Amino acid sequence: MTDVTSLADLSLLPVPHAGEGTGRAGSTSGEGEAVGEQRDRAVEAIRSASQSGENILLVAHVDPDGDSLGSAIALGLALRALGARASVSFDSDPFVVPRSLTFLPGQDFLVPPSLVAATPDLVVTLDAGSLARLGALGRVAARARRMVVIDHHASNTRFGDINLIDPDAASTSVMVTGVIDALGVELDHDMAVAIYTGLITDTGSFRYSVTTPDVHRLAARLLGTGIRHDLITRTVWDTHRFGYLRLLGELLGRARLEPEHDLVWTWCAYADLTAAGLTLDEIEGVIDIVRTTAEAEVAVVCKQDATNIWKVSVRSKGGIDVGAVCTALGGGGHRFAAGLSSTEALEPTMATLRAALVRAPRLPG
Image 1 (cartoon, rainbow, N blue to C red):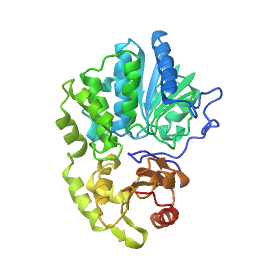
Image 2 (cartoon, rainbow, N blue to C red; image 1 turned 120 degrees about the horizontal axis):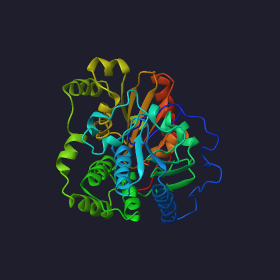
Image 3 (cartoon, rainbow, N blue to C red; image 1 turned 135 degrees about the horizontal axis):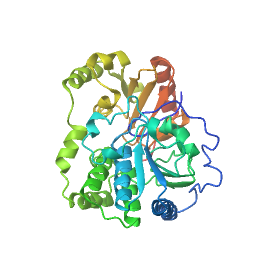
Image 4 (tube, rainbow, N blue to C red; image 1 turned 90 degrees about the vertical axis):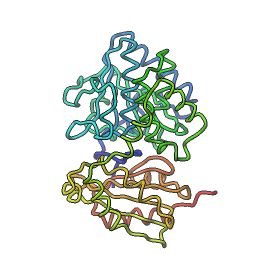
């Protein structure tokens, strides 16, 4: 098994990097340092690069979800307001915005990996827990003169020069809002669209336990800019092509309930995906249906990509820290929403995960 994930559960094989896990030489790891201090360092680096006219590259993780791409675009729009030279990129083949996120503003920022500067002055990564989560752009980030990491995954490897990591944040877009405020940029409608997209992605439209009073206060602030929250939510969560409905029926029909393991799971082979005419990003929501099974604590969906790698999405209802389980298997994520990737066949992959879940301690309450 190997690298992963976030709520999107999308990854490539790891990019070798000598500094991964401990930060780059001379970096500020952020461990033992207050989040506010990390934010100050990150803001100063971004402000300095903006004022100096440096080349700033904002990088979302591989095949980005709403939080990663929304955060990158929101920060890009703020930097544009400051007159900075900024662009946004992510590794995806082909280089296209996921169908559910094509409404996002600021897409003129987007630059394919093949066209980004070979050695950017400043790279800011958004919602990526490791250098490997940047895919091919991990090599570009490693060559940057300076790298700022902004993320809310507890499993983050702190691979930047400055690491703004807050596992208590509901989404990376929440953290980006704080950075934008500290830069003195007023939130406008387009920034709010991007931030709100990240917010509903990682809170499950405010259904998950990460939803706090502060999250609702931020949502109210974003709505105050005049965004159409109903249209954003409908596009992100409730709009699918007909092929998705037919494939969903097949995936639910083959779901397995294993009461002895407190587990429910299903899988989607790449052949299933291509037969339905869909892409991996279009079936991310399947896990949210599987996880509603009353008889199981943990839900799993295995999705095979074109290279025969299984992308494994894992969800817990609160009794098991699946983030710790997936991290131990080479993946990562949050306590109740995580994932991993496996180069093994489906049954060995599930056998390994099943054994890890059995060994995992139960959480109180």
